[in-house]
Length: 454
Image (tube, rainbow, N blue to C red):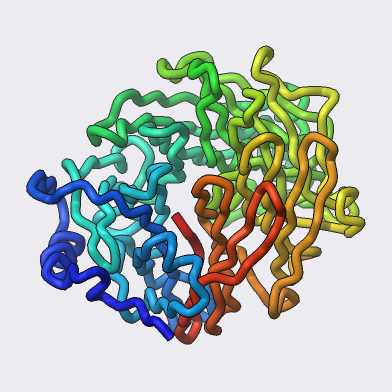
């Protein structure tokens, strides 16, 4: 059996150098002396468990990364241990990683801590060799030390934050009256090729008067994507709700309105002009009552046909499970005639899409759970609205909650599959034939999770 270690491809010298650079803070680390490498690297990311927390597999102790060639990633005779042989990405908690389409560059905005909000770009050279490329960029001033962000288009990053403002109310004790709640919203764009902030904007975001009066407000935004025309950016939205008629009085004599989780909002997306980030607008779909912000993974993609396909999640039990909606390339609004239901396509109930990848020509691969349990993968056809489930080892005990990315190269997609704290494998899926094959073995550690392939 072939084992991949930190000496991969004879780069031991680079490992020592790049490990030092990778762990240092706020330095310009470009190294023009390094030659371009033609290898298609696949970077694996692994979340470290914080043993002081009660939740096993929380990933709160940081993230390791390790890269292998595409050939090795697909080879079941190769063994990978990112925890022992990889390098720690600077981030107090789980790092939010992105990568260039060719796998040559890895991007990170450090999440929480003293350096939270610092953007870093790294050249991927195999094994634990990640060499800083270009200057660090400080984004915390605009989007906090724990921003949500994605590579929204090749070479373009978009970081976002929505923070709910205090509830506005009228009346006096004990007859307080709920009025509204809005969200302070911040968005910035990053040049990933020449790291720098390109544009920032800030505004208060409110829903319709009717929704606001009912207690709805934007509580989180995430997963931005730039449309095919390059003139709009779509940002996923989570909506929360207060029970406007129920409150308690806090120590200062002010009302605290209760949360109301009994009725979800219709799915929504924040739309801004791009690249100006002007004219914020909320669009609404009546196809599902769910969220469009996802958790830590990309949930919307520009399709081959130019439309944006967007997965939803968080529908209430009995609400029909996760959907894939379509934002029309011409109208920049939801297509009222399109919805893909994972529940209907697979004949299941209460599906929850954790992550997915659009693979081209209407084909996608979906990672999901059922009613909060298990971890499953299916190939979906968004054109004829069908789906085919794969059978994975230990799928009833898999947990993909922290998954961040699915790698794609040509017609093949690579997904890291391993139960929390147990060994697993990379699995390779062919978008044309639908074939699934087992790739490299992934060695785990107690509480560890493999959460991404890039």
